[in-house]
Image 1 (tube, rainbow over the protein chains, first blue to last red):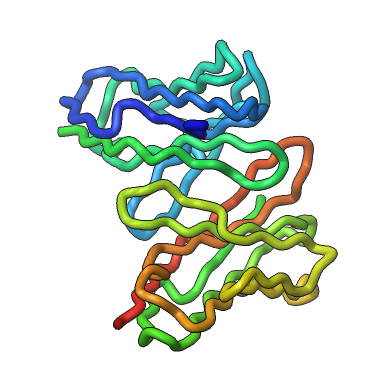
Image 2 (image 1 turned 90 degrees about the vertical axis):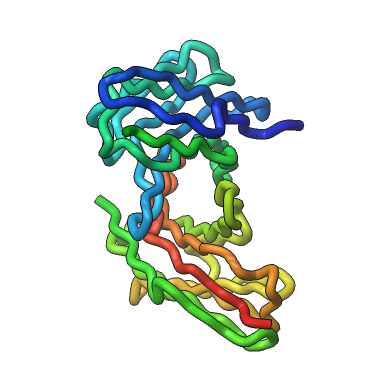
Length: 110
Length: 113
């Protein structure tokens, strides 16, 4: 049972480039989330999904888009990367009892 | 919306001593309070949680207390060990139709051997 798998684990982008982060869960969870983690700021919710085909904005959605075409996958896209998006990105999934997090993607935008 | 504050931001204790991390929340409708532990280079992992109908919950060396009147909840770790060194996050949720959780800013705990 893999839980929540994030790919890639590391990535360096140039300003203006685009990329997609993939999150996959094998626990049949309805809810999935994307967070970013920055020093001293904890975990901030970017976007979330309450089920296949649904997405909603979180606390810091600007500059990101998401899609949940399949229940097990939640994709986070950066259309035009900016240095302010340098961060560690975590995906999570949940039922109604606690989150399961992936191991994170460290993204650097230069 | 919900706001969760957490103190202290850093905490150093000697091995064997106790550690206490305190959190406050703003939304009186919150009724689910999980705690997560994040080790270096890993994602946060749920270690204990408490619901509003319970005042205290224990699991071996860790315990969580909740004061709904004061909107405070705390994590207590007894007999600390070096492997307890990590960042700890408290969180709060209203447990509505979806389980969106608001996290505190985290506490970096160092246990000195």
